[in-house]
Amino acid sequence: MKIRNVLVLPVLLFILTGVSCGNSKNKDDRTADVDKEVIKAPEFDADSAYCYVQAQADFGPRVPNTQAHRECGEYLARQLERFGAKVYNQYADLTAYDGTILKSRNIVGAYKPESKKRVLLCAHWDSRPYADNDPDPKNHHTPILGVNDGASGVGVLLEIARQLQKEAPALGIDIVFFDSEDYGLPEFYEGGYKQDTWCLGSQYWARTPHVPNYNARYGILLDMVGGRDATFYYEGYSARTARSEMKKIWKKAHELGYGRYFVKEDGGETVDDHLYVNKLARIPCVDIINYDAHNPRSSFGSFWHTVDDTIEHIDRNTLKAVGQTVMEVIYNEK
Image 1 (tube, one colour):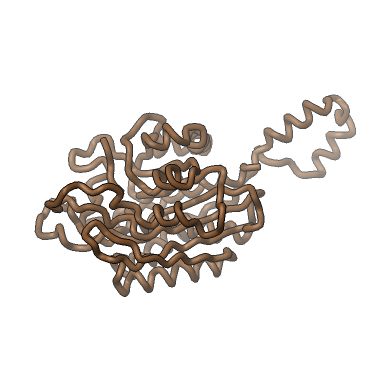
Image 2: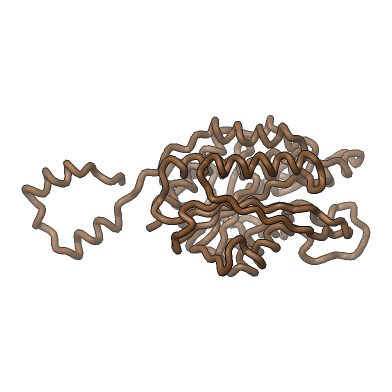
């Protein structure tokens, strides 16, 4: 990606209370109470999510056209199948900024595919071929491991998929792992600027979705959601195109006690997969992405697009904050 500057009470309790006050409210009041019921989502397991992040890192850099990329793609598809999803694979030859043909694969796991009511959850699973933001110029052509930038979002979604298999929410969920997100113009590129070189997998999916006429109420994109002490501000494009959905997510995070992570302030505007989900597929999509307001090298954090994007920077507490928040949101969709 590139930056531009109440639980449902037991039935028995309702029966007991109904003896004394069951007729004290009219129909409209009772309907309003039902609407206010809060569904408790399953418990997001941060240790499990961490293991899924580590498993991706163990393949090495997942750069398109490499063996590590192919093997990791197989792993991700198998995991979604194991967790009960109907899996779709989108294979495509996508052209990079320099003419390289990228053998790409979007991986989709659909839950309740028959449901018309859907929410999209997504992340990119490839890693960048260049550490072009590394302080050492010698590393600029070195592929990055992409543990936070890529693997963290996928790890959170794999744990959500595991929970979806055990207890499904009321509506359908689609988990999409986008490919070839991070093969955009490098800092050292000396040619002219080229439009839309980032997020190639999401551009392809948004134009040719995994099922015809696909639609969802909204999407949630997870990008760089595992770093220690990460902070997620209101991302600019999300604020303009998916504001109500964004505010709902941040409100839920604060209700859960995760306000230190989800900051209710404006951050930067980012070219990321959510942009194309909205522009091309016409689905409002919220980008939950790390924003470091105090880092002079990059607002994405000190190890973004460097060789230091490794497992040592991943914090289970951050994974928990993001994963539990997303689950509470989707399980309360009616």
